[in-house]
Each structure stands twice: as C-alpha cells, then as structure tokens.
Length: 242
Image 1 (tube, rainbow, N blue to C red):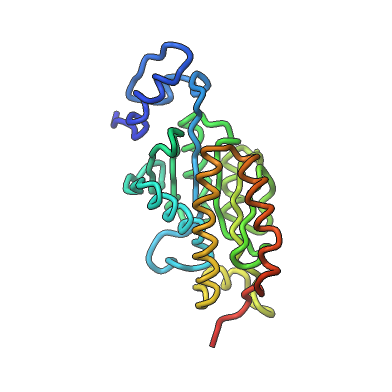
Image 2 (image 1 turned 90 degrees about the horizontal axis):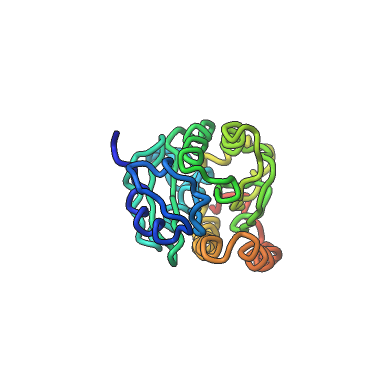
C-alpha cells in the first residue's frame, strides 16, 4: 500500500500523545483521540480546470490556495479525488483539500477524507461561495444547512446528512435582475468585485490561521464581529463594471 501523506506528522503526533502509540504506514491504525492536538481539515469547494478559474463559484479554491501559500504548504498530491496538502500551523496539524470531482460531487472527496483520518466533524471546515452574503463579506459558522449550494449539499450527504461541520462562507452577492444564479456563479468578477474578494481572501487566511491556533469559537467571535457591518462600508457588487 502506498504510504499515506499523514506519515510526515507521525513523529510529531507520537510525542504529543498521552499514551504510547505504535506508528505505522496508516494514520487509521490508531485513534486520533490519543493525541491532544487533533488535526484540522480545511476544504475549499470549486470546479477544476482553467475554464472555472477566478469565477465566483471557485472562491473556496482561492481561499485554500491563498492559505496554503501563506503557510508554505504545497497542494500537489492527488488524494481521495482532491488536490491535497498537509502542514503544521504553529504546531497544529492542518490538512488542506480542493476536491477535483466538480462542485456538485464534492462530498465524494470530502466524506472519505474525513473518514480516513477519523476526524470529528467539528474539526472539518468547508470554505465556499455564498450568494446570501454581500460580495467580500465572510461568515464563520459551526454548522448549518446547504441552502441552494449543491456542493455543500453533496458534502452533507456524504457526512450521512450530518450538518455539524464548520463553514467559512464567502459572500459573492446576488445575481442582478432575473439572471440565472447558475450562470451568475460561473462568471468571473468585475474589477471592483475581484478587489473585494481578494481582500476577503487575505482576511480569510488570517481567520483560518486563527481557527487552527485558537479554535472555532474564538475565531468566530473575533472575525464575525468585524465582518458583520462590513457591507455597510461599501455597496454590494451585483453587476459588472462597464
């Protein structure tokens, strides 16, 4: 069996364990509950391929790419139908994934990943585009539904309909007029919208680091308070600039 990427964490985790643990070629050979430092799995939703790069539906991918770059974590391994990487953030093990299944089948990657590493769902965070938030506004939540988001719907299905996993919602605004939402999410941002999303992604990198190092509750308390009235400082982007 091919050695799993998690093996690079084994020496670190074995030192952290309160009980003696025999390492092996598979993380699944011992319970993650033995370690006081459980890993986080950060997942960004999107569609693979150049055609979909920089579209509204791919801001989850953009968030994970930016976080990976900030922490020096390469996303070069193909693992459980995802581009995958792992690293340590201030001593906390972090797994990063970008499912390559196309958006509507994201759960086919996320579900098996979480199961393989025996992660409780409160150590899984999914970043995704959200039309119910103004463009560039972020919201960190411990659980929720899927609304109209088919990628999130697939993740929930493959978590056996359990919705109690963390979410980083990335606002992309609503489609203008009578525009089909499916067409809207597959379009690229206008210049101003892109600037707002790029700014939000930089903020999101800090939020994800805070989640890993200080926990979801504290990260949500600090970040959501700052983001709550963000949209009042600028108008929501609904249409493309001329």
